Length: 326
Image (cartoon, rainbow, N blue to C red; front, side):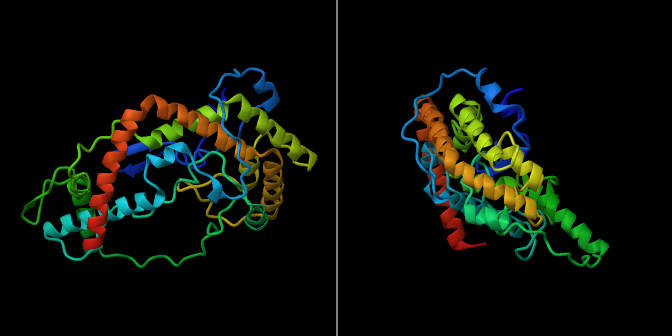
């Protein structure tokens, strides 16, 4: 079985609300493990692959960028898009006779997926020593008291709101509910002035480029060198994914563990960070993935240019909505 097929859900395949559709991307598919020995796998893989540019030495996550980044929205821009859709949904609910700004099942406005969506990222030695594979903000949630019971009337009202947002009812309060509910209406308002369809989604290409890069012989050999480095430090793991899975466990669908890091995890992650730097694992990953992305750009340039124009209009609509508010 190939490496890509063993990449099972650090965050799983995630549906991301990205303007025209819920687009399936490989957000956060890092892995439970890379199974099998890297050296034996290397002998079975073709050496063919796009030529690499300069292989950078990566000393921080901020140094990392990829060719397709210029075509798709940044995390901040995605948050803006989602904020705008949230506002459009509120306006729609108000137009249907609901009062206030807090309704059940409104679209979330949080988006922080770019780094979590990469198979391999920079692992800071300082962060690894303190947090292991966890993000600084990812710790076990404190115990919370049970929420007070809600009345049947409140539950019924929230159920109705959710049905209107999602378009499961045709009329409410004497008004016709727009097609697709207030979620569909918010999407149409965001896409105003465009066809609403991307000829190609840059985020899908990013996902594809990672699947190709992780199977590339140059990456397989680099991961094998990483594994040898770890073994010299007393850790027997075939890949960073295996080390993370064995010591930190499986992240939740949002990409976070929602636990506190253990001492074993912190020690393992510290050795991992040292070995990543020693074999320049992250630099090789950036170079290989970038090579595949450049190949994809060359084969899809016209479609990507069209996608960039549409996204620019969506962002313009989003900025106007956020500036005006609900």
